[in-house]
Image 1 (cartoon, one colour):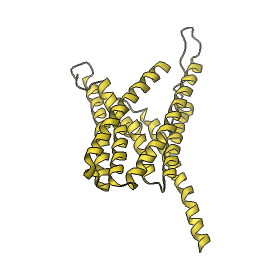
Image 2 (cartoon, rainbow, N blue to C red):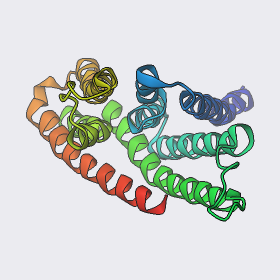
Image 3 (cartoon, rainbow, N blue to C red):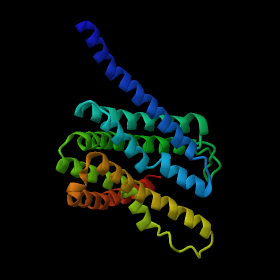
Image 4 (cartoon, rainbow, N blue to C red):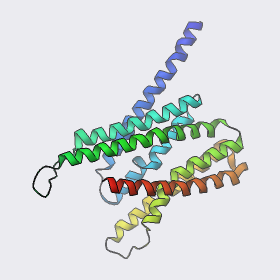
Length: 245
């Protein structure tokens, strides 16, 4: 009897890792497919499956469902790292958008494309290694800690999730629709709006499930502070990416 129970318990981590791995494959593949969707629809699809919001939320939910803190952190990290590898492997092998270019002298620019791909893969792997444990732990703390601490964790997580959206709104305001291509600008604005409203929806869900509204000053204060820091992080990240590119 004890051996049977031990066997079931021993299989749980394996099943969880398999589930996380499969989720990572789906997440990376969806992000890859989103790159092929053009126009307004493409911008919105990217927000849903290929943004910091989408991947951070997936990591947080991985931590939420974990049995312990260590499992939450390792599972979320495995998810982000694996999804990143799947995404860039598909670019390397399937779309091959790094190839086909040429330099001014007519020679192939494939080497520079591969180098850029390698740099971006390394950068996002490093970000995954940092963000994975953070979001995984925040998800776990939100589900298991007493209300004040859970409210703090939820506010921090949702603030980080909305940081990319706030950065984009600051960098590219959606209101000058009179300019040429105004329809596209409105689409970008809708996607940016989704990036800041969806974290509020997640926050409301967490508050309802854990009854965190009793600690609403902590909840909203943590979200505002981390959203500001998150927007600054995305600004610095994109500035660095532009320089590397």
